[in-house]
Length: 197
Image 1 (spheres, one colour):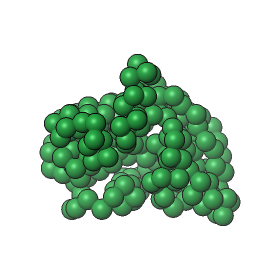
Image 2: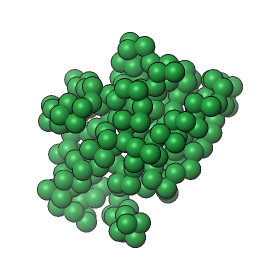
Image 3: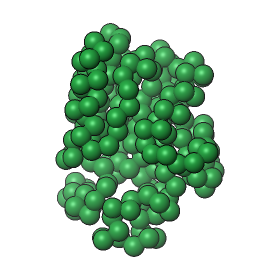
Image 4: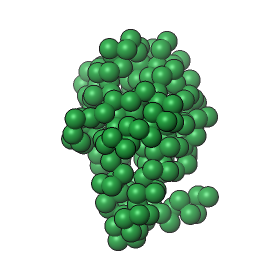
């Protein structure tokens, strides 16, 4: 089964705006870039890595990191970026897709591989979500087939993904992973990272 891992990555200059009270512009940019590189490395657990890039700088770096790249004509949010990635994966013959957040400071290739192995054993149609700590978000979403459910990333997305799956008769599984649970959106998340490491 050919699985693509799609990593949407925003322009580093516009990333992490909610961290503004705790970090200056250079630090936010450096954090976004560092986390993006971790995500691309972890995505190598799949058969093909696609970065949906929100800026030319991101596209150039992702290519240097070994990823296939789709440069967005303009940034229109995570759901639009994910949709563009899925469309490219369909064109490329993918049978499954994992949408992976680019702001997971603890993510590893082993954690992504474990999710893919778990999901790969489940009968289609299936959606497997890695839940975010707090805010009810989703940090990774596996879909087989690629259009199994709609895209609802954002706060409380886990509930929306589950409801969509139930409505469509798609098996929905929450995958628990410490490596994928912690994302960096708000100043309080920085303290969680420090305690985790």
